[in-house]
Length: 301
Image (cartoon, rainbow, N blue to C red; front, side, top):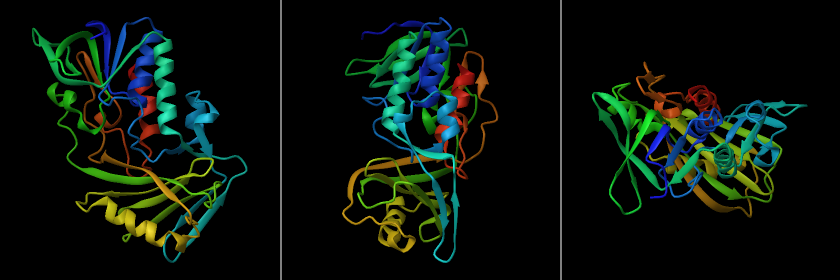
């Protein structure tokens, strides 16, 4: 398998919360293994990538991994409000690049990063959590022992539920979006659009992220409607909000569930912690799960 089966800290989830936790524990000299169920860190891209410049600076993210906005505009079909900034306060992250940068940082501190690995269940010994059964590749699950498990496995929170930390979220927001090549789109302005046609109890967004790249998406809560339907309406009407997507080309599609049941009543227990979406540390108001997971990940570590 090529990884240690006996570590101090086992981090489940290769997003920003898990990677910052892994970097922190490895920096303290603890043997640390971080698992990511996807075959590569940061792929597929799920979030919109919008966050604050302050967050990027606080966590020492190099400027090549984010694109700042100088203007933010809020729109409905009838009203709009625009805000200009002398010093940019918002930005769009190169999500894939930033996640991989965090993985490299954690690895440089001594953490092991294993992709294509799924923590299927907790191991209990004498009634105490002693690690996880990990499935990687075509072989059967292998028991990985650890002194503590950090559950950073997005909205599923399956390990937290097994540990009876909390019952998991029962309500979810749904976010979906396109990555576009759009050479005529304004790269200095971010746009948020409200209205039930585009995002009931939510909003749509247009986030430029450098060169000719743009993310267009929509976020809505507690609805079983297909987000692609709302996204189609956004794309159809986008010219009504002064956004020029002529000559654009779809380069990717991303979809994400965001827990909206609120903060978990308990996210730290004996030999286990939950962080990020796995602890309900998310909000549909800001929709900025990256910012809201990075600090808890650091604190968990």
